[in-house]
Length: 327
Image 1 (tube, rainbow, N blue to C red):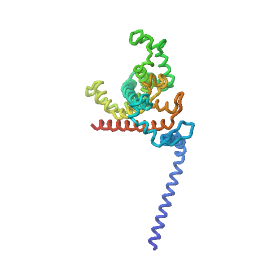
Image 2: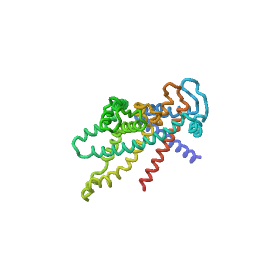
Image 3: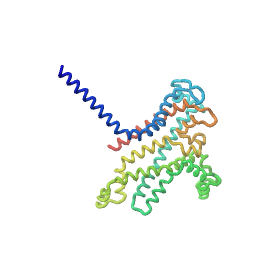
Image 4: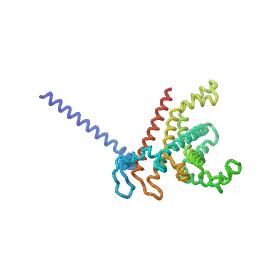
């Protein structure tokens, strides 16, 4: 009995000591919790709540004004009824699935332009040249300026009648006189890619600069002593040692491209005939249509499906690039 009582008292004392330690640690971390609170509140309000809202209303027929009507999986059935989508003329969901083709094309072309440009600009400004701070600022400047203003400048420069770029290109015979870049399907698509790449390559350049400055200098010095040329140092030292960071940068750029709509939203409104309407612009038009009733329920369903597709593409990219790293 005495042995059992002593063991019980010892266990109780241990628990009490543990609770005191936890309470003491919590009190010590109070300033940290206070500092984290605003960020956590914003994350819950702006991040978690919209996800819960979308998961709820994708099961409803809701236009934002009337009473929501529960329809179950009807919105998803409409979205995945491929037989009706591609057999019925003018089916609105055909535009959604075709938008994925445009979005993936946009993502691939923009990444192929933006990432090499950012990498070589980073190499340029990290080299020992005069005025590298000026060039670094110049390259990053489009990222600082308001995107809306930049897209409007592009629109003005490509005006078919008095746009400076249109006049120059027509004078050298590259395009017909009074050519409307934003009314032509192919040229409007390319203009949007170039505008977005010009804006966002500066941010990726900073990421590459951070990676380049972390490469040990003695590696380059050893290669120079062995007689390696600049190209050989780039090929056998810089690129391999930047591979891991490059993987992350490309992934961030790819995900950003899959969610893009900025340039086309301002310059073409998704036209002509939906040919520059990317996936997330399609979702935006469901929530905020012009002249028609909003479709919050279908918009939520499309947003959920799109998020899953983006997640799958990102996962495939990570698996493939990880395998390439080990191969």
